[in-house]
Length: 162
Image (cartoon, rainbow, N blue to C red; front, side):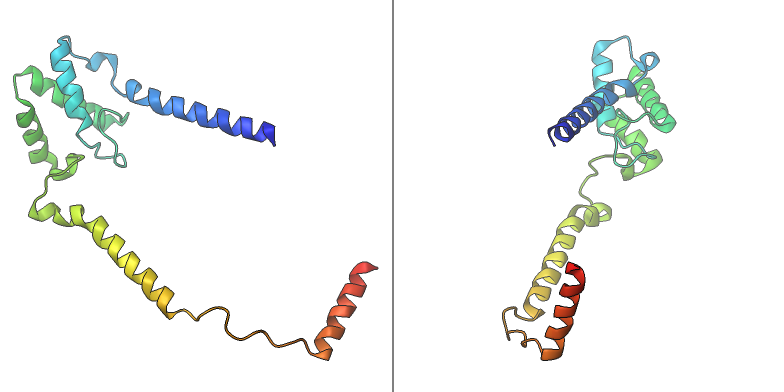
């Protein structure tokens, strides 16, 4: 039991360490800008942009080839003198609001923002309707065993003991 617990803790520790290391590995050394201020801006922008092929992962954390291309575009546009807003607008124009990890609250993204709350309310309503309609427990006591049922149980118990 202790050995299994130790193995589970070791596995959890290794997975946690890998989760911390992977974002640092995503940005390749040849992508890093020489100017530390521009690089910091690029990293900040990259953390707010979604990798279009990954599940809810930023381009800063992703190793996908498309994420690498998007990181390079961000760095090229910053090096060309674009502001952060211009870089974001450029990517939104090309890929839509989906490229943003935190899309703005607009008419076309309203369902995205209120969808989870609606789903939660529907699930709660279904749960409470189920609770109210289910039969009450603790009603009638089960009927006592018949003589035939008692005989069958005695035979089964007798067979099991032999």
